[in-house]
Figure 1 (cartoon, rainbow, N blue to C red):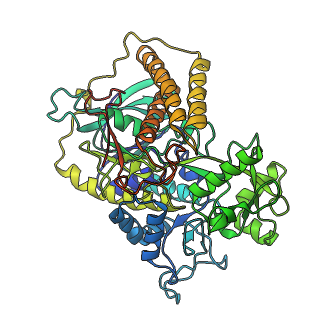
Figure 2: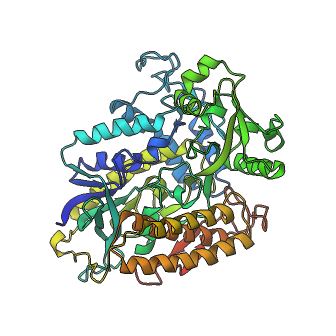
Figure 3: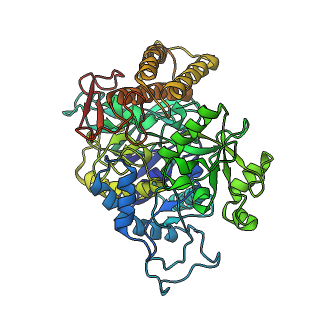
Length: 560
C-alpha cells in the first residue's frame, strides 16, 4: 500500500532526525531507515561538536581553521553560516536533554555564569587543526548521546511515522510520472520493506536525503555496515549533481586488532595529549608537520601510511601512558573499555593504530538551505556537499554542519510545501518486478562487495596514482555492468540495493580522482604530488543529465 506525507526523510542520523523534528512542526513526516532507528554514523561519533562557546575563542578563528583545513575549496559563506549559527543549535540540543561533559563534571551552571559564551561550563576539548579548545562533547560517546536524545524528541512528536528496516530503492521523479512537466522534480521514493520483501511508493511534497556516508565502499572503515553511499548514488542516478567525491577522509587512528572491526580511536585523544610513535618509539609526526600529532587528519594519515611502508610493519602506535591514568579513564571510558576488551590497557600500553576510511567530504550539491538541483529534493548531513568541508574536513565539524544545515533545510522546505502540488500516492506507478526471480546465493553478492572494497582500498586509498586509478576504473566498470545486469533480473533485497549503490559511489570517487590533476587536501597522487595553484581551486562536478534519468552511466565531468 502506497503512503502519502508532506516530508519524506531518508536516513536516521543526526541530519535526518534533526530535519524531521523541525519539519514535523509544519506537516506530516515519514522517516525511513535501513536498520534500527539508532543505526547511523552519528552513533559512532566519539569526538564531539566543534563550536565557539568560550570567550577565549572566536567565530573568525573557527572559520579560519575550517578554511585552512579545506585547502582552498571551502565555500566561505557556507562556513560562516555553520560557525555563526552553531551555538543556537547546541543550546537546542540542551533543550532536548543532551548532557555534555562539564569542566567540573558537576551540574550545568546557569546563564549567569561569568563567561557569557560558555554559560554551561562545558568541557571544551581540542582536536587536530583547531587553534582553540572548542569541542563540546559527552565524554567519548558524543554521537550516542545526541542520537539518544534526538530520537527521544522525535518519538514524542505525533505526526511522524518511523519505518525501520526499510530501504529507499529509487527516487520518484518526473521520469516515472508521465504527467509531470519537469523530468527533474522529485515526488517521493520507492521503498523496500526488507522484512516482508514488499515494495511500495511514498508520495511526498518534499524528500530529504540524509542517508549518511559511504565508508563501506572501502575494505577498512570506521563506519557502520549501512554506510554504502545510498543517497549520493540515488540522487546521481536521478540527475542531481554531485561534487568532490575524490575527497575521502581516512581517520588516522583506528584500533589495529583482528577482532576490533576498525574501532575508531577518537582524535580527541590526541587533543588530550596522546602522541603518535612508530615501532622504534620515535614521535614521528614532528618530522611531518609543525603541529606534530595535532596536525590535520590528511597529513597524519599520509604520515602513518608512509611510516608503515618504510618500516614494513602493519601499524603505528598511539601513546597516552604519560597522562594521569584516572583522568584518561574518566575522559575516555568507551575507548578505555573497548581496548581493555582486547587486552590493551591504554594507561599502560601503547595503542596499535592504522588509518581507515572515515568521512565523505563530497556529496550531493546543495545550496545554503539544502536544496539540490532536483526540485523538491533536499540533502543534508554527510550525503550533502554544502561547501563547508572543501578538500578536507576539519575535525568535529561534521555534527555541527549536520545540525545547522538540516535546520535550515527544514525551515526552507516548510515554506515550499504550502504551494506544492502532490501526486496522489495511488497514481504513482507500482514497482514493476515482473520477469525477475528470487536469488538466495548471497555468497556471489558478498564476493562482489569484497572485490569492490579491495579494489578501492588498494588503488583509490590514501595515496593514489594514475596507474592505480585506471586499474581500479577498469575493474569497477566490469563489476558495475555485472551488478546492473543482476539487478534487472533479480528480485530486490537490501543487500542488492547496497551493492548497487556501493559500485555507483565507487565509480564516482574514481572518476573524480582521475579528473583532479594535482594533490590537494585528501586527494594525494604521486603523479601530481604538488598543489596546482593556477586554475585548480574548483569543485569536481559530476552529472548524469545527458543520459536518461536513473541510468548509471557517467557522462559529464566538469570543474566549477
